[in-house]
Length: 255
Length: 274
Image (cartoon, rainbow over all chains, first blue to last red; front, side, top):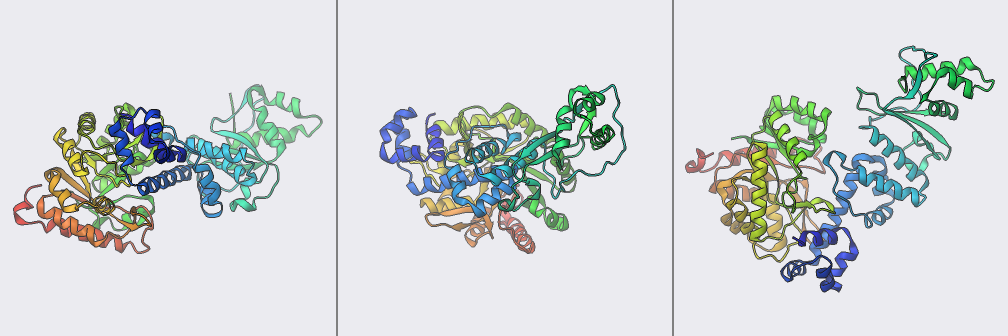
């Protein structure tokens, strides 16, 4: 049945929709439509196509909104033309139900980054990384929280970043937002973490030194080796204490 | 009879809890719970309090392909877990092999498509093990097809033993947008297969009436409900609200009460039928 393919294309692509008026024979050829099927498409009112096309784009916004709610709201409220420009280019591929909104959010984020939309692209990346880790908790404060349990690194065991953790670098301080357009422009390292038993994703604003420390926790080095490698006359006790803190916060684990 | 229910939405959850005694049953969006462990736990708790019916939007029963086996298996698990009396989805396609529209798109209304769809729906119903209700959609692209919408639905019903979820708001909007008679529609479809009804409100757009689920149920739709229950016994009504939630939840409770009154006011000769 070729008609649904043609209709889906027309509802997701302005050029294909225009083809119906401009060159119906071309449309028939492209989608191997029968004369009857082409007549079905030609016989529908143009207004119906336009309304449905807008609804397809509204559904796209809703899909993005499930994963990037702040970014989506910003685009709707402050930069609708930018959203329209993006939405007019997107044809969504079928995805499993449990991945709803992820592909669309990745596509939007990549597009914003490529278009160099500074703080908006940064915040989209921030929300996307959180979405990929799990359901976002609301009102999670940024900043390293005090350790609950005092744990100490063992000298002979390897350190690994926790499975539900990742470190991301931004050119804007995404932890200060929203509003997105007021994000301070400064290089910001953020550790995102979803604990195994917690659906929320916690965000920690960390300094570059801590980010370097976390980068060393790749499952190939012990605490002593890490301290030896990046100590460089620094206070080795302070580095060890930092590793203890990361362990206590469950951002790293012993393997 | 299941009675008069409300579409469960996160924005309404607190008020639904507070007024549980005035809502006979709840309908949830299937895809919100299919693969979501945490949400599923909440749903199990909810199902202890009142009947829950899963209502899907992504089965895409009108697609060329058979429905996704993993989806159907998960749906069967969900239905069994909450002991749903039935489950529902739409007479439409939402995707092709290459494109996910994300919305309920109209099918070419031919006998061949109707029969193929009926076969798939029958197999889904068998796999899930509970009655499968198929719902009429709102469509804005009115394909110049050989069958009217009502004839298409009748053809589908002729070739499967699934039930119908008749959305009266969709019927009203389609009738106004595409210039057909809603009563004639009711006379054409097999009304004895209608198990459940959806009631909602929309707006009048620039070119067409729009199905927004963001307004009170209009009088035209209430009139259609009265027409329907005068002709056939139905088991359940449901108020759908997805946007512009009223500040005063009483507005929705009043609609639920009104639907219940309509359900129970059916003629004596039909009263024992469901």
